[in-house]
Image (cartoon, rainbow, N blue to C red; front, side, top):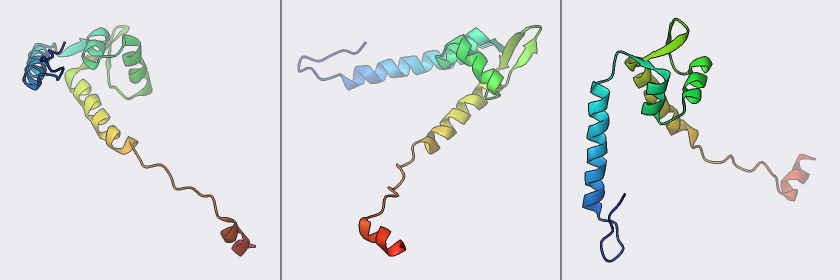
Length: 111
């Protein structure tokens, strides 16, 4: 929810205050996390579905331990997964490859 000033421009100070409050809530919530998280807890923290978290576990992208028949995720494994996402995002955006099409003149030179 952003507040608009009469001119229709977003109030930057109000937006920064909302972001700061959200960051503080997330940090406080993280400090109160148990040593082992359920799939549902990890999904909530990662803003994804529990099915997606289970998929990441089965793919080996997110480490988990079995507690009986249920997976549990350590805070360290969750932090490592988030760090891996930050690292792979940098290399994902590559410039498009150059066209390999040749001009007719270049094609004739090869003949």
